[in-house]
Length: 396
Image (cartoon, rainbow, N blue to C red; front, side, top):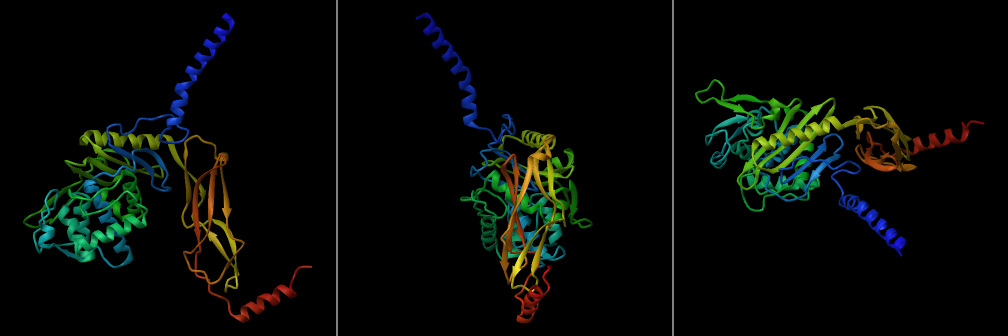
């Protein structure tokens, strides 16, 4: 009897020693296989993302729908930069402030009704001074009215897969049905950073508007990290009494660019400190592992009845994966997934396959592969010559 009781107590003690570990494992952490880390403890929600691959390094309630305040202006800047790239807008174009634009309260560059500035100057006013008036002026320039521009904002958000977002204005002033999430803000931040010229505005600490005029306006970036954190060059701060202190920030070191988003911080000091801590964690723990370098050949696909019998697929840019520092490259493998052949015609940019990257046998990421150029259908004479060559000039 004593022996049975002893066995029972031993089993019970063993069960209790294992139980807390089991609960912790079931609860899970922000990233698979890592020890629990404490980042952005005072933020209502947060996310830390690698800008190159879109890999989420850390998240905390990242899909919670919250007021984004002036971080909204990231979408305003994105649509502006995209218009510039398309050629429908130039940095030298003049933007004239309407009475409505000039009436915006909160952060502003104090535009007068009828006052004109270039797109370049307006972007400075939005990125550095968080000008609500400058945001509306750009919106009206691009779409004719802020209402039409808001429609463009929501359409672009949908295209980017921003499922937690709905915009009701272009500057983030408090209004109903205007919300986003840390995750969605990281997505649009990543998209904005694809435009190389944007950090000229978001990364500058100070500048001037109306320089040499009777009313010069000194710009000081509301994001102090661009001055005090090495490698930081954007993106956008935000504050309202409802949203509290928010920041979508980016920094780059040793080729690694990361995006940190925090919403609902209690004050600027805490906000900046916690974002700095997120950056420190990313740069100390992670690195990019190149799979293919830009221009390197990845594979070939046969084209049925095409003017060109095959297309060659090369990396348009360096294809990287995010890995923990010190990890052996032997754990990273990849597989090319392509059809046996494609039927002409083929359009440039058309998806033709993918490159799947694995880490220890688990899918780490996938890269879509697209046709590098158009391939039209071949004429009958080209097809005849190709068939004849195959019939009469086969190796024996």
